[in-house]
Image (cartoon, rainbow, N blue to C red):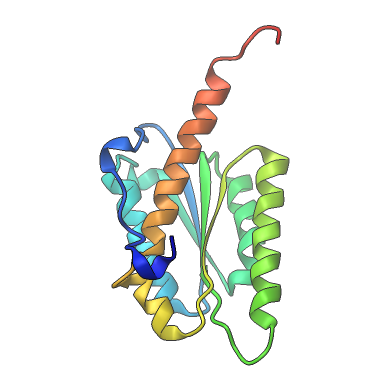
Amino acid sequence: MASALKNLSSYDEASIPSVEGMSFGIVVAEWNAKITHAMYEGCYETLVKHGAKEENIHTIQVPGSFELPTGARLIATKHKLDAVICLGCVIKGETKHDEYINNAVAMGLTNLSIASGQPFIFGVLTPNNEEQALERAGGKHGNKGIEAAVTAIRMAALKKEMTSNPKIGF
């Protein structure tokens, strides 16, 4: 369903796994700070709301969305984390610059996830204009930061579940 038809922040709170004992990293792009910082607030508050301890949430800022994969790797190297959430906003301009940035970030985070087996969450807005970005960073379409936090919680719990009961044989 297109985000224009729903609130990105809507989810079934009862279906969210416990985050007790889990640690999270949040990497926030400084570019489009008004938008990314609103996403960060939604993300951080959601993690805390579902039981993450403030001391188990580690945050860094990077200059722009292009630097999110590098920042994600750095924070994952420094802290023992269950998931890393990357928040950014790349607004379409007059050139195809946004497509190159968005693709590079998506591929970078995908490669990190596959290589490490750790969830690296793509919380990057890719709107056509600032108005659309604001609508998705706490406006009428909710907050993409909340969606990214929920995704991180679910993926961290899935990783924990899949690695806690090793099977013998096939």
